[in-house]
Length: 547
Image (cartoon, rainbow, N blue to C red; front, side, top):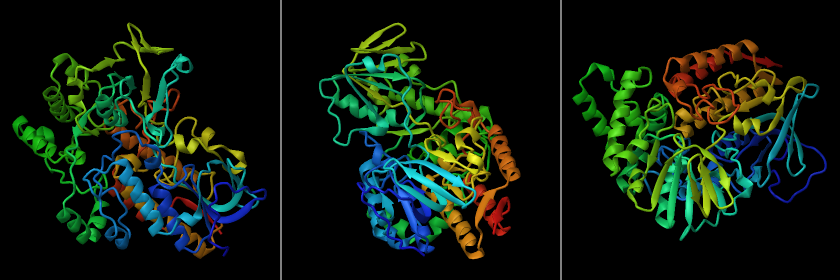
């Protein structure tokens, strides 16, 4: 087996193709863990990351207020007790700097940095039928051949800015929340516009309002948001989590969202309004979205049931916003609660009580474009010194299709997915041998605690590769039948829920021209894990293993 120490010098140039056993693309949670597992198999591993260090999404998203909407101790690796014991989270909901420090700590502790080449972007991965190898090409001109390619590119790592007219003509400052300047931005004394009120917009808006001379928020779609009630963790909470780590790890995979929640056995519509409201209020005070979203089993399949919790959220908006007209503008009414991402915030709605904050609904007054001195809507013009684009991501498939991936007979993944993604288990695609996608489309990915989903994905993929190495399997890929059946099952399952009713990145609706399809497996991590385990136990049913 070749030497496992791969060059990590970002200024290195390579004129000849080098060979390795496996290439991993990405250095977030999934990339770090995947590299560690493949190295433990004794494989030679090369890994590439566009950033200058590990972190993935949490390296790039440094905008003010950037914070995870999953509890810190739940949003961390659980596979290694030493790793857990050696790290103490400070807050209930961790902010971006702490998550980045954690991932840097984990990479060092797991000794994976030596496998990474940083500040290097993978441009293409092309399969060769004759050699049964992938050729991976980077933007530095390096070519690497490998038996296996594993994509660990993340689900929310390709930011998108709408093609506004006049964007190049605007003479002020422009920023996107997903590529925020590392040195920060000072908005003191400036007239600032923020476009977008999804998760990043809701987090950045209150902090920009504190600095700016005046803030104008251009709201595309109002959001359901929950006050996160963030605070410091107690020593007792940290000790309790560590003491019960094994039980936590085992139990998380038994729940739909990869989080331990108490789902009631009674439906929302089977009890009185007073009883429902009392349950919602008690769970609201927990400041943890899954406890609310999973209160009753019918909330995501029955629109009438969903309306009960949606109206509860609307009442919270009315209570937080002084002006009734502004409150109504901020109130979602056109989609079921949960069909678009529910956000966690700190003083978001109260921000609109400030005299120096203006709310503009672009549903009612559409954006025409930017001007040299600001932004024009259909009916008004706004003078601005800076514009912040909190316009989200080309989610799940965007990061994968940003790489020129070509399988058998030169077929591109982009062409293959022209009408929407097709996969088996969200892990593989027929015609693309030895290509493994971590948290890919039609896996639970963003509808779960993604770190738990990542651990499940990495461990299952590692077991498959270990099986191939042991049994002398040259290539593996899903059968066309397995892909067709899984894709059909995933889409049919989504159609039984309320998810398709939201025009969101969950379905690709936020990207013009992107095929409309649910990008996640909605059956829950618990069901998905059972299916994957059954597939493996049955000799990797649905995969063609060629010796």
